[in-house]
Length: 208
Image (cartoon, rainbow, N blue to C red; front, side, top):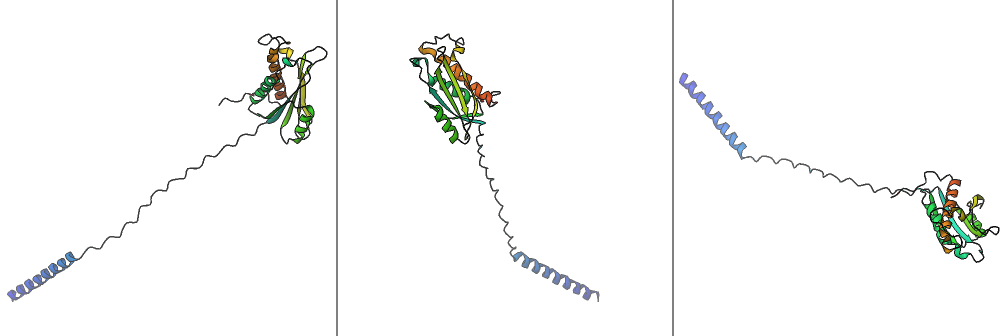
């Protein structure tokens, strides 16, 4: 009886062993399933560089047109260098960061200056007249500033180049080198005009 039971157990163990071997062989013959492909790694998109914002030029506080006129000086024309005087006036105005000289004109008459002012929308017209004082024979530089559109006088005045005779080189007012005094007078006119517009303080244009 016991021998039959042992034989039966041996048979069962043998069958189980064979089945295990068969199953293991079947599994080893199977191909492992392919793994799903990984999604592509997104490439970083370069950020767009913002275009530089162009800074608009600041609008000047004062825009002017400058006209010069030289009246008949009765043979004393060699005393006057209106080109140098005009440059001196314009340069002084341009030294101010808030002033823009839009245009200059020589031999402009007063009536032309008035018409130019009426035709302007924003620019003031500076009219400078150089004459010879009939009383004492000295040169005189007079100026008027006409408002745009209305041509009303914003400010006016006069100066005498002889006032600047002792500044720097002593000059003979009856010689051709009289121009230095004319330039000083022109710069004084520019200062007076800036003061009339309250632009004479902190007026230096920054150096770039």
